[in-house]
Length: 432
Image 1 (cartoon, rainbow, N blue to C red):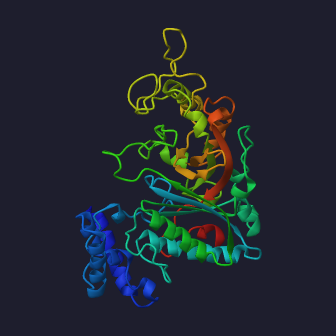
Image 2: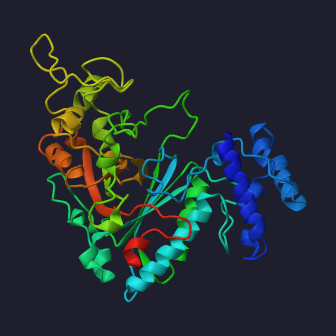
Image 3: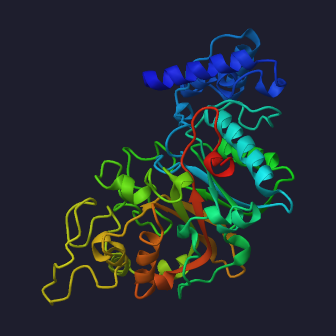
């Protein structure tokens, strides 16, 4: 573990020791202190029963906690110019949740809710148990937990802030491939939760849902997953449930224009969105029974990339730029004109790009045995009208992948910038 993470964890312990006994048993011992030497013991291969004894000993004696030796030790910062969960590496587990403000909540109630949620998110992301904790994640570290908050279009009407609603929150256009369920779309408030441990992710979900109290009501919730850290011999681009490498052409933080593509500029409009981003959320069901009937060659033609390693059909490796002009001896282009990768490429969309950060989902099987599974598509951009919309319009007109997917839910949310210590997410809007 790096010195930075060690210092961060030590700081968490000091903060928790200072608060011990002041907020009930839930805050007396941090999640990391409760783990204690169990993290190291578990890594050494001790039996579950023995590990449980070590946990009890560390908590009872007040011994300094041994540093976590697994993915549980990784923590994301809650405070900063941008909210966490946008450029954070993909996590193994995710929950997407939308709430509607309860009648009468208004601006003051919304501010109190965001203040409460922000404090809880700060505690949980640091690996600390909030007051009156359920105990679900007591023996886990932060596990890369991120909590991200956003506002839907209707939020501004319900809080009397319609004049502050960004033009970028105008409703998305209708697409011919849409089969949207209104009950699982949109919402006043949106929360994205990600973590590398399923219990840590659920713990955050349950804690925030309880903390909503009478101020907001759950509208919809979706659960997702990705490959677990360490499941491959080296870090690799994720695969989706079709088996395809997914995310190769994502903008990268080191790109010269990354900030301007993904985040609202400091002098952008409205001012409270500076450092923020816009999230488009789509539940995309994959018709896997139909897809899996295709030959490997046909699947690769539909996508425009090799399934084995994600390399373009024009040759090279995964990161090799596509040669859109390369032809076969027959004269046909190697990457078909309707291939998904060709149509979605920035170079064929006037440079339009978005940061894709999805989760896969599987919600059981239908009466016919077909899996209800696919992609919880989440993409980030400084303006959806120059990011998601032009790309989706082009895909809607002739993407070879369209017969094998179904867009079943949709949402667009304004995600404000991050906050400084002592502030809460959305404060520049709600306290203005």
